[in-house]
Image (cartoon, rainbow, N blue to C red; front, side, top):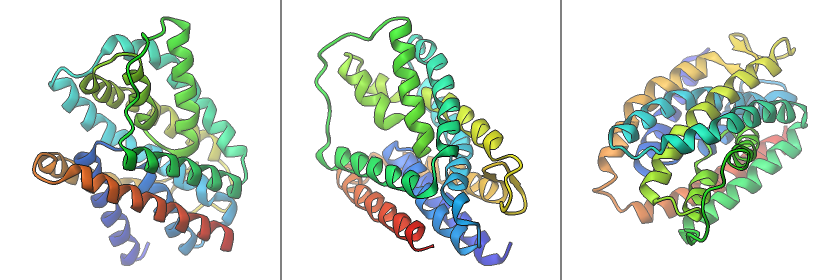
Length: 268
């Protein structure tokens, strides 16, 4: 790997970690489109571009999820009763979702990612907060919701916050608890997703050297090293910077990156 790639992955890790700490968002929306572009420039075959980006992002999110979970647990914001109810469905849904994603061709997978990121961006720009109007489902109902969140998370390499926070808010969970609980749910999503993409990509031809299935290990190490360093910096600045304005800017960045990703995939 040339020095330019080392710098690119370190810079991406720093950028992702900072915004994850500042805005409380997962890094998949940034990592997947940029990794897709970087992998294309490195000569990764077109049929593996998005899958490798998804798997590597999922593995990187494991690191940021652990840090986020610890911080929210320390402040007593995690509803562990909800985590226990959702976790079985999340694990099965995310793991199964990687098998679906691995069998979807690159172009439709990239289009689905772009559409979902447009939804996330719109949610941020409009600051959508569903009105609390019902109670949390119990037992199988909660596990079923977890499975649906897991499948979608696997297809777009996110920690599930853009789905789980609105759902919990709708079910009368306090916003602080919804965010903290979502951070805890993000860990099993990331672990199941990383393992699933590793298994599904194992033995595939044309992957770069030092890949473990659809996880590119050099990028994973470099991304994780810098994101774990810059995430606390972003968190400390969250109360000093105009977060509402930055969220709108971030939403615009998501749309631009997703558009660039589609252009990369369609022109490769």
